[in-house]
Length: 252
Image 1 (tube, rainbow, N blue to C red):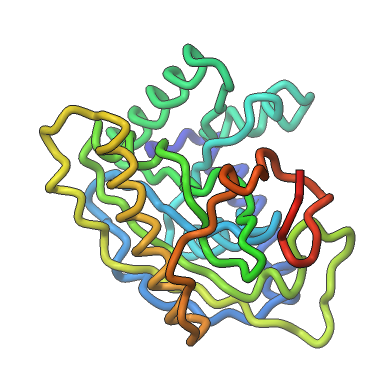
Image 2: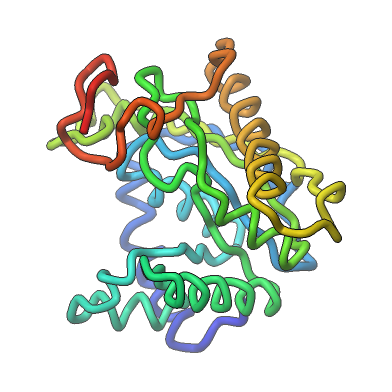
């Protein structure tokens, strides 16, 4: 995204103040930065395991001289001071209504067209999988990718959940943890180009993206992912919240 002078100033301030704190909180093991596109706009799709994920992803991208731009809840843009900052640094408000969602996609498309990077969590919220594997996702990232043909860069990270577990109330800083990030090759969605953007097409493209993220996470964790992706809706887990039981079952 073409950055304004004000945006560059704010990002510089955040870089000077926030990066040292993150470096103290967690060691870094980052791989695959060379796979980030440098000559075109792109979509970054990470896994989502804890509320501090955006800090990890932002830290990684900022260090690669890519300004992180997220789709953020529209309500945050109405908060005094914070809303102004979010607008200034080019974050994209997400509305719940159909008209609002279309505006959000338009803003994201504009960011990509200008050569920027947009971070979209395909899962939409923290994973409800009790083992923290990527769960069944939403189709927003796939829709944007098929509409723009922008590269979709899968990203997996692991370790931040040890510092701040899902829905935790405090940080666990000692002993010092390691934040591990792995970037993969852009997901090949070319077989879907030119097809009607139906629900079936979007679901298939979303699965392709989540498969790539899951494979990267399996490499980081050195574990086999579950054969079937966790489906929060099928398990009647219709909203995120701090009432998630330890075994992941029965949360409202």
